[in-house]
Length: 423
Image (cartoon, rainbow, N blue to C red; front, top):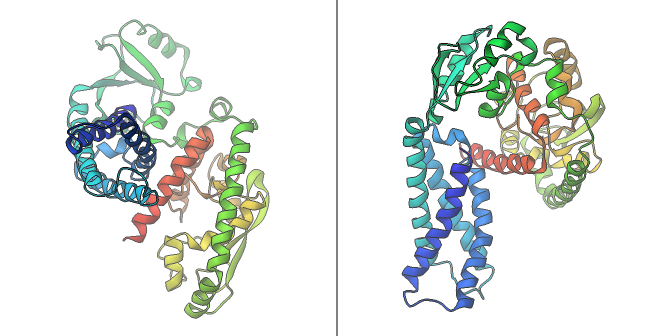
């Protein structure tokens, strides 16, 4: 379904460009002028696609609610216009100027994209139907059934319990528990269905592919051995480190320029030190000292915090929303203690508690902690249950970590900062 969103969007960008050129230049263009339009707008489209990622418009969940989908499209189209204006503003020698041509192009693109997304929202659950059956050996079949039904907007339909009497069209799914938790007789019963149009998938794979998080109750040692690469990831590690150093140097420059103003604001807002330092747990359980701007009254504490914590100062609230309190962490990134993207580094005493209460919690420490991360986009953990949810996303990130995944997380972090600061 992802490709049914991104490829048509790219096509609509180019179709809208050619349509706008036909309207604007009815007598045609010279070959060099035509090429100039095509090359420069192709560059602009790269940034436009990034904006669509930022606005979550390539997420499957964007098709769930029609109203929210349209609001996101409108917001993204405004950003697209601003990107194009900035691009051509800084290159005034280009043939295209950011005036009515761009406005018409944006209107045509926005209309085409809105129509396509609306068709996907309306047609997909009615025409691209896939029947989903579950194996009778599930301990909690209601959870599985409910999960299927929450994704009916993708065309999934619960078909019942899998059996030899089921008559299923080609492509129907049978979900079964982990292969390590299914007995020989059940394996044989599934094997007997292989020629009846069924496809087979383990529940954890089905769950992960749709929710983009892991299912904690299905985890066992075999899952980690089968799913998580404990190797060095040399290419990814080198690329991440290069990106980390570049971004940390940029952060350091911003920190240096803004330090006098930040120091004045923090000191005027509340009494106390300028910086906040605290021991945190890093990669492979190593302890390091994290650096932040102080956003709370008093010094470091060893307790949970949340957005409504009464200790947060007035200025601290905005520093946290805009993530400016984390600027000093460029030091941690340069030292190699943290990465730009990874699980959030937690307090030492909290980690000790969670190790005892949550199975496999320490597995999140096989990578460097990050300034932002997949779990940070979804959960702000201030309790045991929220930490379990957060671990679901952390382990998913560790399993699927890559430079492209990091890029997606960074783009969506920008969106989160913008959306939270506007509340």
